Length: 256
Image (tube, rainbow, N blue to C red):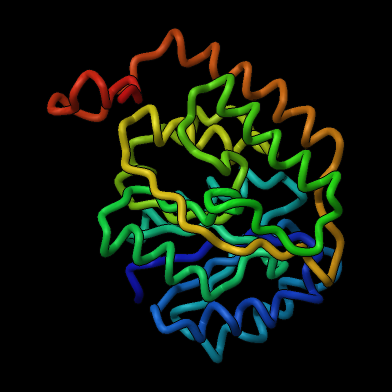
């Protein structure tokens, strides 16, 4: 068993799932892979099962009873990973918008450089997005600016969904109290990681919009994020963030 686990939530990803599994499995860094499938009616889970013999002990799947949302899928995966003592846990999309080769960069930032969270960032070196219309690029870019303005989070790509966590981050965050399960989930997890004083590094990547399957983005998801950011900030004013007695006051509040 590897000490690194990639979690990919799926719902109707039959066009992408075999290729993404093969791509992750063939990286020079040995990754295990967990697919969390929300009862995809298109047969995504059947394709994963057909590959498990080829990657016995490395390719795993958790099947849920319905479409329960991105955040709950990741939290399900986090708990699964912690129970099995993985040291590095990754979030990744199934649609190749995240290049599997970049998993190695995120791993290096945590394993070799000592970061507690590494983020595949679209904006840390400019705007590195392919195949998005300008309207969506602007929406995403200014959404990150809005999050930084409201929360003070010192990250350029606050809504990124391509990340590596060290085990201690997920052990520190009370996963049962994570409030948001849609688009705001990604923001909340970064915010909590920062507030608990963990070291975060943005790793530049090129984000390429999916070419197969359908996007899960909707107006309701964006609305949740806008309102959620305010709720995250207000809630933080009434909470103290401490990991242990040795944590300095500045790190406990996420301040520099």
